[in-house]
Length: 114
Image 1 (tube, rainbow, N blue to C red):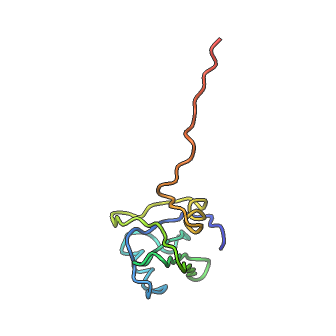
Image 2 (cartoon, helix red, strand yellow):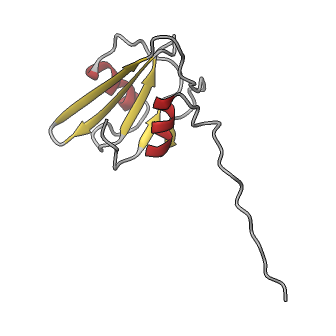
Image 3 (cartoon, helix red, strand yellow):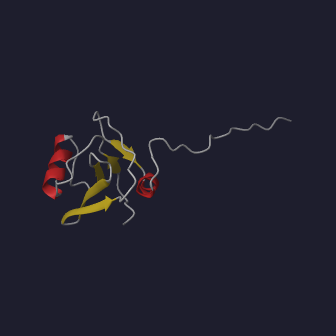
């Protein structure tokens, strides 16, 4: 999968995975977002075994799908708003981590006292 240079949005809640490009682009429009801006929109099915990523590239939509055979994706259930993630967090999601719960080391602020 290409590393996106644009924004990536996790679309919370579950989507009927029978939806293809037209159905998913309508869901993006209903959410008030611009499907043609080149952003990546990530959807998940109710079983949490399939995710679909849709994005606009130059002259048409691209649709990418990943299906897990045994595990499940961690997925936010809250439909209130799409969550923006980084390309690094998308890689974590595809690798099986929950980008909403992964936190790095806390930043330390040292002061030199003389």
